[in-house]
Amino acid sequence: MIYNLYILLYIILMIVSFLFFFFFLFLLYLIVKICFVIYRKFIRKPYDLLKRYGEKSYVIVTGATDGIGKEFCNQFAKLGFNLILVSRNIEKLKKVSEEFKVKYSIDAKYIEFDFTKKTTMNDYISSFERNEDINNIDLSVLINNIGISQRELYSKYTLQQVADSINVNVVANSYLTHIFLNRFLKRNKQCAIISMSSYSGTMPLMLSSMYCSTKIFDDFLIRSIAAENKGKKIDFLSVRPLYVDTPSRAGHKKEFSPISSEQCVMGVMQDLGYDTVTNGHWRHCLQAVIFDLAPVQVKNFFRYMGSRNKFKED
Image 1 (cartoon, rainbow, N blue to C red):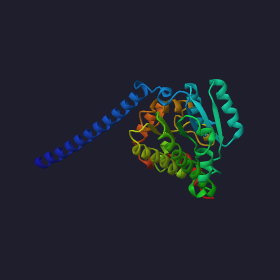
Image 2: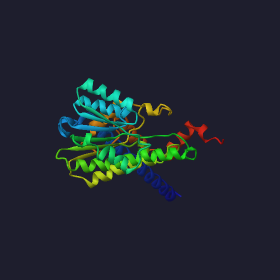
Image 3: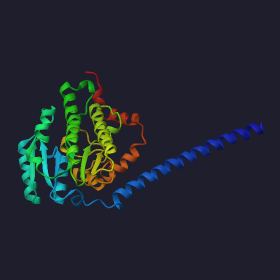
Image 4: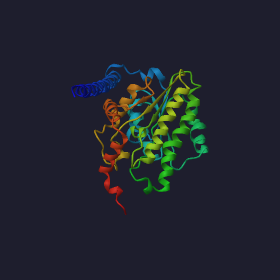
């Protein structure tokens, strides 16, 4: 009887020891991750981007007239870069480009391009690859910012919404990255390609099937290309922000602790030249560390609870 009791105590002691050991590893993991975020965001000195990519060089930004795209234009123009704004609304393009010209005394060109309607290779070749207005300038940075997000059951999508998601989130990113990658490989100075993915692209979330699927494509594409071109004079950065309060998200339910477009962009520019993946702002970096610990089933549960009306039968 006493012998059996000793065995039982030994087993309990072993289980407790293992639990403490795994808790220690878990705690160590969190500490290392958080320390890395603190180093990147509060200790590491960002690059002088104008010096790195070239004075008077141009930055081309898609979705440039609103939200994150416009803020990228604002921050790069503030540093002294010239701009090429790409969007579908010609009136907004004229207004915003003129705004940056006056505010920062830089050159701001624009390209009218509707990524939902212009989807063929010839559309991209004529507007970007063979565009004389941008072929004769020193282009140093591409920012693939354009994107479409829907919050709906996949069965309720229209086929047009499916096509738009693919054309904007996948086709545009793929074609533009290919066109300007080959141009940057011939440039003698450092260049950069930034791809706006999403933290949602790291998991299969209900009500965001097309967005998650296309954004993981954007993430994997830029990271794969970065591996292929390691050691060359091109910085690649896949950006996985969490919720950013932008005009394109006006119809969405606001999620936990949203940040502004300015906070998002400033966080991205801190990591440009150092990393190939970032969540952008330090708050999003810390949130990603915590959220990564929860299984996708938990995240989908909260999605379901927050949008139960969408699951009701018609």
